[in-house]
Length: 168
Picture 1: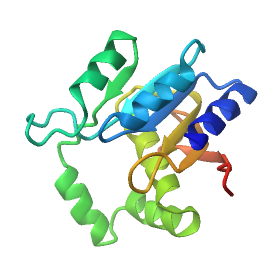
Picture 2: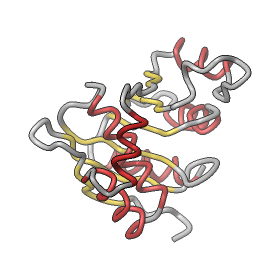
Picture 3: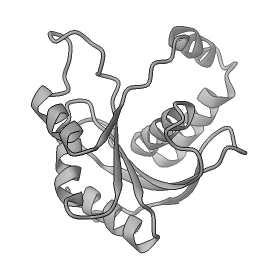
Picture 4: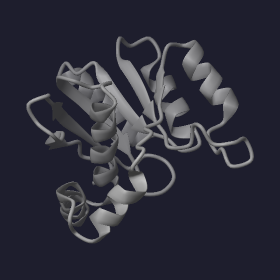
């Protein structure tokens, strides 16, 4: 939870009004929602779990319902050519995947996931211009946060600052 509080503080300090969070089960999203309660911040939850059938779905229905009832955007990116993009990326032919590998090697998996969710929101037309805070983690929960600049002039999000976690 400390990463969530630190990320919200960084957003407030920098005048950033959009925070995106990666969440598979919805638990991290629910915790962030509680931290943001009463604040004028647009919260966007990015998940790959929406659209799956109930036996396979991990995002809790009660959390999804609460988030949607409170005006939170829940976004599931649907890339039609995901299989081919991954295959091309593994062959080293896609510059995005090469870039992500370098990000993971330099900053770790959490910051790599932050890049991915901001890119997904750019591709989906949810983020177009300005700054956003992204929160993600390597496994369960949030362990990383960063500030990104989003511009239609750039194909990819620009990492402006890694928000230091309280434990570092």
